[in-house]
Every structure is written in C-alpha cells, then in structure tokens.
Image (cartoon, rainbow, N blue to C red; front, side, top):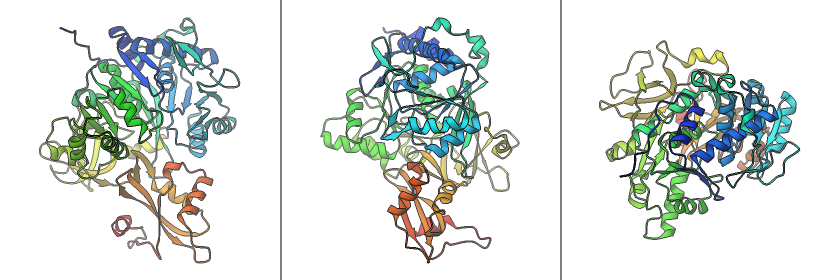
Length: 537
C-alpha cells in the first residue's frame, strides 16, 4: 500500500514549512505554469534558497522591507519564499495597483526595494517603480525572464533545467537562520504587510506574521479535504492575501498547483483541464468562464478530476452552485469568507446540504471564533443580525498606522469586521451586508470614498456617490451616480473613465456604469442614502 503523505500542521515559520515539505516529499510535483515550467518541492526549496543568496549578494538584508509586484508566476512564489529565508519583511502588491497607491505604500513602509516585471498586461511597471523609488531612496529590481542581467534587471538563471527570472547565488553566503531572524522563534515576528482599501479612502497596511499567514490555509486543510492527490488552480494574484494561503495549503498537504499568470476566458480553462485540476476558483467571472468552456467542449467532462470549486471574498449569484455541480461535476462551490485582516474564516465543506452551500459562508474553521454583536454592543442571539467580529490564529498583528488599531478591535480582542450577518442555530455563517462602504469587484476591495474623491475632481461633476451593484461577471460593479454641474457639458462614461485613468486611479477601481441624477437622496443629517440608490438602479 502507498505510504500516506504527511500533512504538516505544526510549522511556525514559512521557511520551516518549505524545508520540511522538501525533506518529506522531495520528488512530488509542486508548481507548473502556463509555459510548462515545473518544480518539485525539493527543486522549489533549492531555487528559493539560491534566490535568497542572489538577493543577499545584491544587498537585501534581514529586517528590510521589500515591496514586490509580480504576476502569478514561478518567480513570485520563489521570491516569496526567498524573502522568508532572508528574514526580510515582504510587502506583496497586486499587479493592478498603480503609481499613486504604490507610492503611498512604499513611502509608509520605508521599503528599501521594489521588485516588478518590466511590462505586464501592457503596463510599464519598471518606469512606474523607478519614479516611486527615486522619491523614496529605494532600489528597483526588474524580474523579466526575457531580459539579460544588468541595468536593474535580475536576468535569467537556470535551476534544474528551469529558467528563473531572479538573481540566483550560492547559498553558502547566507547567514544562519537564527541570524536572519527566520529561525524557530520567528513565527510571531511581523514579516508580511498586505494592503487593503479602507473606508477612509487611504490604503491600510495589514501586518501579518508567518504564523498567521500559515494559519490562513487552515480552512482549506481542515474543512475542504485537500490531499497530495489534488491539483489546485491559482488564477488570482499571488500577491493577494490568498496567495500565500494557497501556497501554504499546497506545502502543508503536498499537493500541486497550476499558476495562471493572465486569465483568458477561452485559453485558461483549457490549460487547467490539460493539467487535471481537481479544484477551480475563485469568483463569479472565473466560474462563468469554466461553464462556457464546458459548453464549448461538449458532453464529455472538461474537468474529469474536478472535486470542488472554491469561492471567497464576494457572494455568488443564486443558482450558480447548482449549475456548477450539474454542468462541471464535483461538489459544486464551497463558499468561504474572510478579510485581509483575518483571512479565511471558514468554508462550507464538500457534501454539505445544498441550501447551506448556496446561501452561507460555511462554518468557522477550527480555532476561529465568530461573535455577532448588536448596534448597542450586546451579543446577538442565534439567527439575529449584527456586526460579525472575528478572532483566530490567522488574525493580523495590527495596522501599519497604529492609530487605526483602537477602532479595529473590541475589548475582547475580536476584529470588528464591519460586515453584517448572523450565525444560525447550527453554526452556519450568513452574510447580509456591510457597515463599511466597500465594493467587492473580482474579489478585490474598492473604497467607494476613494473613487468618489477622484470622480469629484472632474469639472462636470457637482456631486457623486459610488455604489456597488450585483454583477454576474465580477460579483459587483462600481456605479458612479453623478449630479452634473449645470455649467459644464454633460459627462459621459467614456469621459469619466478617461479622467480617472489620467488621475492615476487603478483600472479595477474605475466605475463601469454612470447614472445621472438631479439630486442624491439624503437623510436628515445630510448623509447620502446609498442603499436607496442601489434599490433604485
């Protein structure tokens, strides 16, 4: 009988997990990308250590902050682990962020390094990074597998026959783990800073430890039943909080993953099918693409090994779970919920009742506690709506701006999520709304206030309210409800989009719909009634 692959549940640092998996199952496949590059767990450990040495030789030191903005590639996964070996503080930035956001982040963190691709999806990341670096005395490293070394480019090296667009060096130059601050006692040191849109319109830096980042994969390990036989798909940015969660899952259970650098509605499902994925994710746009691909494919299952689909970050439209199960196979959509501050509260496990799979965000994962609190700060009864408050091993260590921490936690140390919901008598979590003014598009948070501040600068806009509306493709779409300035030409959506781009707003935050109104509905205190707007649109 085959020997069971051990699950690693007790690693306390990222590098310890990488080392232990490489020793336990060195020849198991870990990563494959669209270009066909492959790494086993041992090869991954070895190349990450060589990349750490290459970064050391460039001057990256333990405790320094490295901001990196790479697509979902082998380079991003290797860099993530190389920085963990060095004991650096890493700041993953999703690729859609642009100069205004990156400049704010690098300045707030005092980052010493900015790692970017040359160009990704027709955007010149290198030029942007060089502008930001010049303002903050940082250095830029360009990771482009197609470019030779020099002039700020990492160049291309080969490891185990695989071309890697990172500097690779001799691990003998690396300091011992204890000196790098990456040893056994480093699990509670802040080593990760993610940024999320806040209700103030200013990005909030979310500080995590190795221990909390590793715990973000608990729901997938304990509730979704992953084993070494699984092949996961990763069609979202590795720089998202879910990126290390997925890599942590794979390394803990010994399963492999397929990296999707750029999602294409026709090509990507076919590529994932060729690699025999057992898990598909992760939001409505992807699920609709998989359904379309199955219909093009015909009656035979396109994903014959599919075990489940995983969703989190935004609600799915009614009926999607049933369609996925009927047309693609597997258990359907296992919904979850979480925040950058407290990733993956829990999941609906495969085989759960259909109504629970369809309508809830699952049950809390082991070790996670959810409190539901009324507006007067008293505990809500089972089934009664209130603010959802969270505490668990994946809870963050506080914001980069410590002034935000006082309002973030209650007196018992629970995170105030700002989301509304209830827990029923059987422990299922139901989401009903949001206290905070956030739109979730393609599972990414958009601050309505941030977008409003940009739109309001347009000369033809007198007043604006930005709201989210349900969208079958993206989960939610941002709608700008505008009171036009009567002395200016009437604004159009095309003109508004062009203006937002010129103002440096990240493309995913730009409104997709424009509605012109004579006035915005307000309450007696002058606050815009956004719920009323949503119901009217």
